[in-house]
Length: 279
Image (cartoon, rainbow, N blue to C red):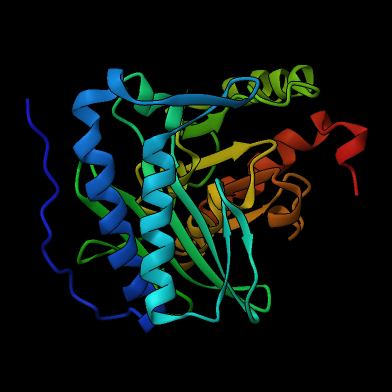
């Protein structure tokens, strides 16, 4: 079976210039990722830390994104998963070239590219791209969120009862695994089901698209979900840390969903939040 990425332009309505550049960068990275998807067994792979892997594809995709950004915005700062911080001005790009590397390396078809741009701490542009399905999720602050050329909206589900919720199991830092399992047990009681696909960026995009009603995870890095957070908010949803506050990019402990589902998720999770996360 041969996969390909079609380089078809999407409408630029509701996109600011930085979002358009992010789309271009994501497509370049997507081409690299998909070219290697048929030869995974030949890739050079390294373990960055326990249960956290990087391949030559991650690095090549990240460099393509950085090069694309630099051609248009040479003075912008960049925070990228593999190469770290690149100095610049008050504009910063937050890049995950392959979110779901473990899935990718196993041939599990759930991975994405995540690119966000923030100005003085305010998220302005977001792209999450699924190159396997050629789904481009985009958002520009104040202009809503799109999937390709379709406007996105979170679900209007009214409670956890019957809701489909996404999550991520804390596989890298397992200090709070017991607390997480308490959250999971509490969440399972009323919902229609819990899903753990393995790409947080896509999970957020799916919340924005109404494919799942909510999502929570502990210990994420900013590049995992900065773009997704803007997608959800521009699709009418709510994003917070697990205490219901606004420090989610700092803490990496996050809840997202439609407004009512998000409110119930915060209330359900709060009793299980470890003391070290209470701030």
